[in-house]
Length: 180
Image 1 (tube, rainbow, N blue to C red):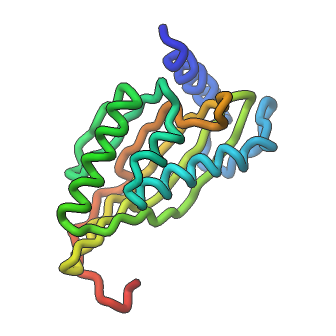
Image 2: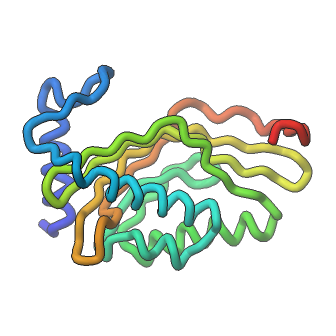
């Protein structure tokens, strides 16, 4: 089993212990080292900033060399990403679509929570991925993501992520100029 798979397996095992995952606010547990949390959080922010800026180079810089993930394409279908190259190809495709159609991308974040333990961080994110089209149509994809990060020699890097729809997406709407 690869190092990445062992790390992900370990995180899943830890998160499945009764009392570790609940609807209640997360309380620090033995092993959390929240002094590192701001640095891990900056990596989350850098990745989402790169996505909104449609910057593949900046996005690549925050991905671990052994990254994997499960995401949602623009049609709401699942996507399995098995490598850094596949992740960059996936996001580059989204960026190409946005540039071709004139869409402006944004991420309306509702909540981000991160915790670190040793060289690993676990973050949860609730956000809407939004594409604003030139004709005023707005497509919103309500999303819930979990991200596992690894503190490498180059700093915190995304090691694995999983995104899913948090609710059914609303039908595209037309935004008035005063909405922004």
